[in-house]
Amino acid sequence: MNQHTLVLDGNGLTIEQVVEIARGHAQMTLSPEAIAKVQESRRMVDEMVAQQKVVYGITTGFGKFSDVMIPQEDVSQLQENLIKSHACGMGEPYDAEVVRAMMALRINALIKGFSGIRLETLELLLAMCNHGVHPIIPQQGSLGASGDLAPLAHMVLVMLGRGEAEYQGKRMSGGEALQAAGLTPLRLQAKEGLALINGTQAMTALLCLALYDARIAMESAEVIAALTVEALHGIPKAYDAQLHAVRPHPGQQESARRMLMHLAGSERTTDQGQMRVQDPYSLRCIPQVHGATRDTLNYVWQTVERECNSVTDNPILFTETGDVISGGNFHGQPMALVADFLAIAVHELANLSERRTERLVNPQLSGLPAFLTPNGGLNSGFMITQYVAASIVSENKVLCHPASVDSIPSSANQEDHVSMGTTAARKLRTVVSNVFKVLGIEYLCAAQAVEFQKDQGKLGAGTQKAYELLRAEISRVEEDREMYVDMMKAEEILKRGTLVF
Image 1 (tube, rainbow, N blue to C red):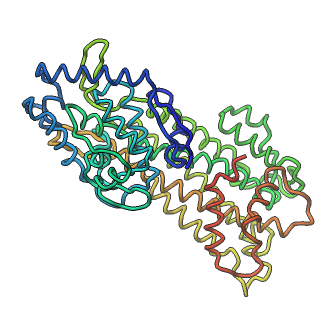
Image 2: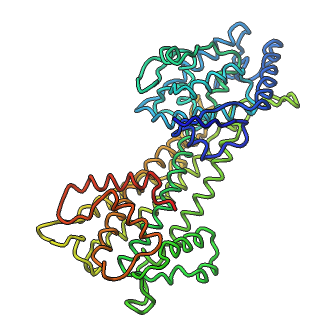
Image 3: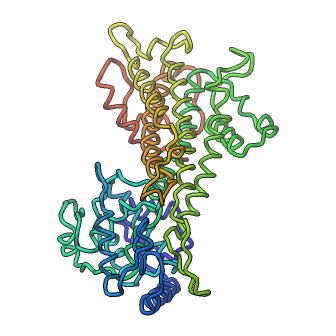
């Protein structure tokens, strides 16, 4: 377990750090300045309760019940009831890495000092994450406004000694998990339940992990595409910098630059007119297609990182002015739109990859042995691997239908527009996972293809490295074997980030 410690202050959390916490189990601590802000906002809540002010979610009910006043002696019970009633998620639970990302993001939002939570409550959530107490959080049930209520309520249940958690690989009750980790459950006070669950941290956690993986897929797709270019004797002149300077989209220019970098020194490519005047689009337009995905990824990255350091609950307390403002910062629309946008963009990596795979296995298009097998007929070679790629690409097209265009009114029509951002983010993760599968299939085919041309010169600087990395774990296919084993290995090689260089 990585013992690196990250200091959270509510302002500087990066997507890479979220992944460090989620997957590397990096430890967290709170900055002294942020602790002071938390304590100051808590004093504001205590004063409002003592003065019996009418403040949403502190001395009133929630949603449609916002006009119901709560007696002072019941404000603590109100918060516990909120958690119990809202913990109604369904379906399979999130992986521990998603849960850890949710916990870290919620801590980072609360420590900004606008939410009125007690320091000891925040410290329990921090200790749970640091000690590896991972609440069991079902995946279904969030509308993405008012935030991720159901998923976050399941997270908070464990803080009360309720619900279920995973600790050291075992699933147990929340109380047992806390006890095993040497932690003590607490009783929520005024505002705390609402502060803990009214936010966008489930969808943002999913987006952080999907974005990180999408960037790996982006870089991997380029070097794999370059290897295919060599296998098909493609024309790298289409990646010339002067061509892309006259259509100066940054992503397009960067993708063209990286294609040339991976092909540097290659003896397998051709000049315009040497074998053909132009390549098909799946080779010639790699910078334009990949570049658009790259620009989208960069835009989404900036948007999500901004959300990682935002206050997304309601109401929000402003200690400097004394204002308590009920608003809509919990609404997941910014995350919903970018999740849908990125799903479409990253899918295009697979869409183009499958077309290159078809060119590699089709002898009428490649000039190579049919389905890349030296003894076709007796052996089917890579015939069905292309089927699988086509199937997964088709599945992704269904998943790329945007969730954010849908909205179902809730809470007796008080909450009459919702984002469906968590649904969008859940679909996005599946799309990204599928992209790795399709790229892995092209990777296998491209490596096999260049081996039919060993006497035709050396590979490029990047493609040679990519070829060697694959062959270190997966041997050439001489005769038919159980191809799924190779396909799963290739997918894993890509997910590790092996081809990011």
